[in-house]
Image (cartoon, rainbow, N blue to C red):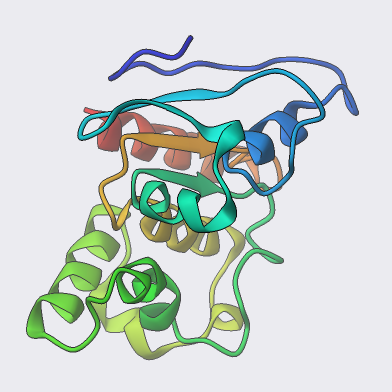
Length: 171
């Protein structure tokens, strides 16, 4: 069980299924058995494992993921604005003035300048790319964030910055 406002760490040796577990929570991989239940503030308990991909769509706003590798998790053909704004576009919010303001705000919260919105991922360091991934995951103000080793590919000083950022954003 993972309770609201808490951090839960899943620890294990390489290849034991940590990433697979996170991807099953996101319904990116179908579990072969068992159940995954999410408590949705609007609908109560929802059995994720029983939902179709279409049925999972409303929960995508509420459950987001920060992927392990900031290099491969960002589309190099998209600007930072497009990457961070993608979840908003999926919810139909891409034409009003709130769209750019929400992206700019989230970038600032993630420790990035809003001046970066029109740049592409290749122009950023690994730590900055991971901050973009975090901003993208948090733009919808999700109830649950699954973070798959979000600092494993970063150097030690940047790891500390990202962990502090996640802790601050949790508050």
